[in-house]
Image (cartoon, rainbow, N blue to C red; front, top):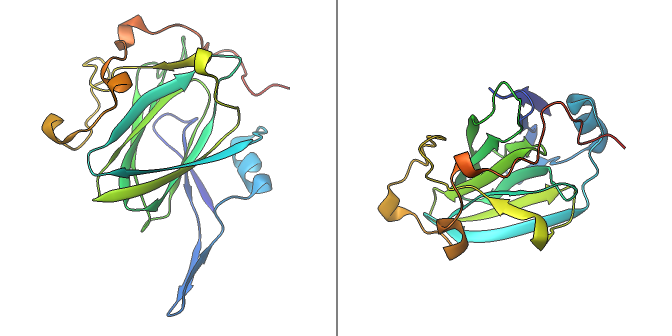
Length: 192
């Protein structure tokens, strides 16, 4: 496995080694010791989630407030998505900036999105099965989001607005300027 820091260093692209031949392939999708060595801290995933969506479905941008903040390790089992992580840590030199990576069943890459980031994705293929690990349980009272089309974020979702499908919740998320300040760049959210 390769662990590649993105333009926001705390967001990590994971490139697994794929072993394949005419019979098919084998890939190791997660290994705790290598993962923690690459990050430099411990992350304990507690739940795996999976969703299936059709082309143009945009889910996000979502995050949870502390003490229920979540890190995610995301990947695509079928199809392709554009995956986006937005830095919402006050005081961060990359505050308000984002990383956007295409994840697909073909490239088998994964993206680690740490606590202190809003996360979302849009389906680029006809359908996509999206799977992810989280290190904290879902908490409805701590669930928050940002407007996917906020001009301050300037995210290129690669599809026209007419092609996007959003939940009613995601069409009503607040602007980045209205962000509920919960994350501080100087705080280690992984300290035990």
